[in-house]
Length: 134
Picture 1 (cartoon, rainbow, N blue to C red):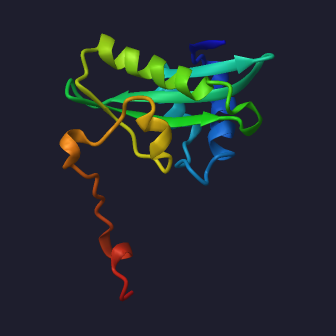
Picture 2 (picture 1 turned 45 degrees about the vertical axis):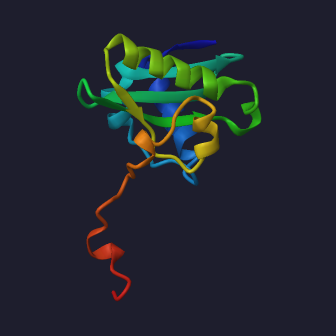
Picture 3 (picture 1 turned 60 degrees about the vertical axis):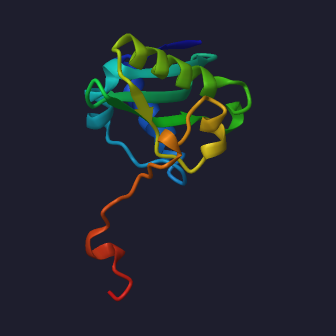
């Protein structure tokens, strides 16, 4: 069952994200609580088995963050359901683009995500940590 996240979902969401740190950035309970109004969960048998967050930066752009589905619940369509909920919310707010930073581009391409005009790239400033001579 898909629904908006509630305060009692913060810790289960954090644990689900923690269990997927091979693909996701860690999130603190405070971060999740701050973004709770734009978070969704999938519940199965009374347990949170999936989550995602939409962070709206401006009318131009929002980011789909922290999409996670419990490993034993994958291939049930929960990821697609969560992405659809976030994108629909962005559309309600008239946000023009939703971005995602991912190590699973094939999944998101199936959800109609793609390169913007096939020419824009997300680049990150690495500071001194990107300097190979250190």
